[in-house]
Length: 569
Image (cartoon, rainbow, N blue to C red; front, side):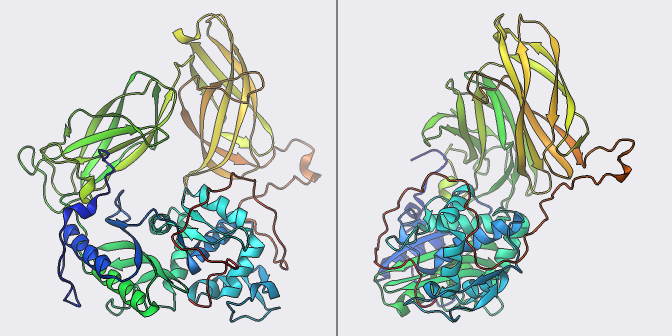
């Protein structure tokens, strides 16, 4: 078992009673005990994934990594694809889609062939009452390859939309759990897009599963799915203790029995206080870079997010533990003992310097930090939150650089970039061609909207100097953060290893410059991301850039026929 990523939650509990129709308030171990008993008594198969969106680890999971035929849960991926295009300005809610004969198959639809609907109305039909004709219309128009590429871009692994009628739509409960976790965090596409998707899911009309036993007025944003032998429901239950993501996928049981089982799962989660023995919130850098093989100090802010104070010593004292994993999730280093956090009141914060030995192999690593008790036992297995960040191990830097980037750039036009540099010992006396790589970040959304590189020149003879180079601003308008760093350049390779520290600047991108005599010239317009296409008839839009196919996931249940998700729901 890994230091911080253990999943054996069920080892904490024993079988308990399910006689009460309204479970009493319970802690995480009590919830697990009840869910274990419920799964054991269920006559079919069940894949469950239950989580607190504020925690790094699921609170409960069984068959969570098994591929299961999704039924109508595949429509979540279509919703994601549409909202991604709306957010990017490539699609509008007022655009239209036509229901064709091929969309109304054996599974049926409430919409007749030839029906023209707005994108908004079609999404509402597909999500709130699980109409199959609109789902298949989106599947045909959007292109399943593009939908799978968007899932991969959102880092939702284990979710595969069928490419044709020889395949099934397949997902793991953990993948559906990741979808809803990102959604409720506001991190699926963007905060605005996440809010729109969640609001639509909250208007769900098929409420005979997760919401069935919940108090009147409980808000649940969810999506159901049915096929012969399959019954699913997945979504977010807003409990009095905060949102909980619940995914329940069942097979090989009667439909009504499955629905009752899923309703029991929703009731148990709603009635539980899902607080681990203690909990924490962390503020850590998203990315930290350091020289391979060297020591690096990263400061982590740790806040007491539990319900009782932490002591400096004794049984109520807690420490910080850490682990480094490589790209294959193999542990390459961990702390010898927990770092003391000291006394901390509820809501209080301490800053802890974390001294890491950076792996000697150049590459990207994941550092995960979490809590441990006074005996040094990590608390992640009991549901306590963890936090991860990227550690980049780079070769020795070749130069220190001060980059003078203009505060105002003009879209599509070159501006002067001035880079003053001083070589470091690793540069030696040989020549090193250098480039400046940059990324333009939308500060409000925190996402990259453009990138590029500027060839600078050659660092030679271990001498200080200045590079002058043109930087052409992307065709954007507004104020952005620009992250940049020196890279080595090699013949035939756009960029090589890092050669200098990453830095940032805030710039404003405006329209093209004007000069005397330009008053009568019409300046070219810089398109903004808010532009939306005009409504169009049903046409297959341009495909996204090709990405590697998502690996096939062997489902627990296979079926033949078209990838449509069943008559209802």
